[in-house]
Image (cartoon, rainbow over all chains, first blue to last red; front, side, top):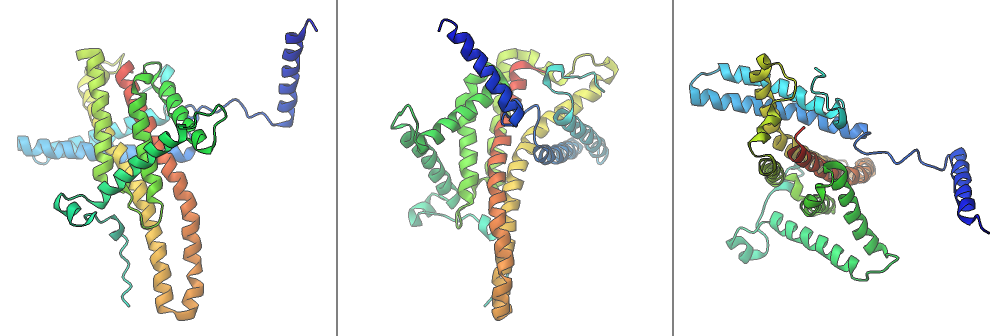
Length: 105
Length: 249
């Protein structure tokens, strides 16, 4: 048996082929980050959006109290919070890291 | 028999360990945290004690937990992620065990308190900020100024980015807290339906009470998923924040 390694590689290939045919092979280990479950996304997106708006509103309220500009900064920062929320959501569902498209606006 | 529905009672804090605990305000939450930590240490210590080549059940569980978090760190943060592995491992196992321990009937759920999840989230985001400042110095603040941004828009976008950054601990803590609390409230609501039905409808009530009981059983399975998923989500997001701190963009 001089070509033993060769033969075993050949066997591995045929085995993989056969398993593929029978649907035994899972289609290449799914990357949890590249392909997160819909449940995961759903759970994330809502909270991200709400959290940014809460932070925006809180910041506006606090600045209003400090600068005595009630209620203008609250309104402005509530809108900015909404924008930050969209930014957060875009981070979750937008293009993935490698091509982290900041210009994708 | 009074059968008021008190779904929030399960989250109430009380001092534990009798008068000794009462004198130092050692609550049932603290006690549960200690128990959870002991359970984690016991799993790792007892699991790894045999050091078998072919692992037994306990050793396999310990090794899988270790390997899972280790891979997550390297996948999410990159090679530098190894430095944060002990932290992420502690965080993940604490939350996972805390979530799962709370599913045992009559046990307190530590992660159903915003104070706990908030402290964890603040620590994560604080650590990420310190790491970012440590590695990049003042350059870290360029994180709030995306590349290729028209200078006219800068004041607006910087504020948006800062709010987005500040919202991280809020979303991180609220997600875990809300998920755990909501699940346990639903448990209790169905459970109290059982009591109310049995108390008010006699023998018919006992038969009808089977329905909410079945729902609670089904909910237990779902809550097991939520417990594991939320611990995973928390750890993954902690990794992503650390990634951002290490790599900036």
